[in-house]
Length: 339
Ligand code: 13P
Image (cartoon, rainbow, N blue to C red):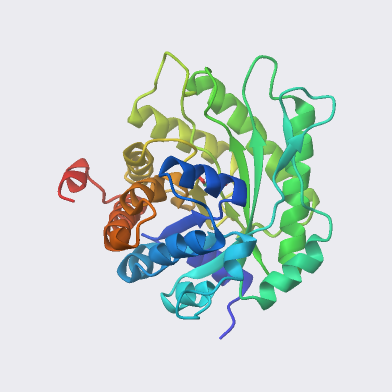
């Protein structure tokens, strides 16, 4: 049974479920493995990811889709089953990161542009044949002295919209991810201002590139204080300001918004999502597409040791459940301690 692009987009943001971002590039996963003193090899990466994807109940109940890196989409589990099949057998959709990472943006010190449009139509075709149902492209906007610039926002939203159009033409639902980083010393209001500007421009470019909004999923940052800001906004303020910016910028035709975690603590990422969903009726489904906030505890519990696989899977299942509840507005702080 083939699903339409609209059906795939809706399934990705189905109530109470969200997306696992497991698409770390070889460089990024090496950094994560360094933190648990584990060598990053094709086999260790496979073993770690197989542990997550085989957390059957968590996958079935709370994970609507998994974003994979090129290597993982082609990899087989220890018993020979393709990893993508383990994901689809659990009732979840396999997806693929198609961007080629960021490069310095010309004449714009401190800013980057995401590359990867070359030969993208051909790659999309291959990924569809390998079983992918959706794709991801991440644009990165930093906040600092004199940045972001108009040039950076324009170049990145144009690339995002070109990517989205290419994916839709080739049969993949595009996750459109413009990430305003939370690394700076700016306060929450500066984040709100920049996020609003970026999202306005992204939707303008999507329109000019004839992207059907019912067929995409938006993956934005939350509106949050910079990590180095002395003024840290409360969880309630983050939830309230994020929803305010989204209401100003994201058309109701978009079926769902799946946030990135961006360096928030596991519990903050969950609490913020819960508070937004607990606010009452919104025009779109709000869920998660977390990398670090879904994996950090599992990575630590596993620590590269086969004998820790059950503990790693358990830690992942817990965060998946907490975030699934948050996506339904049914999380409570007390549920964390019960684990
Ligand atoms: P984080 O949740 O760790 O920010 O990762 C999500 C992601 O896919 C970034 O592109």
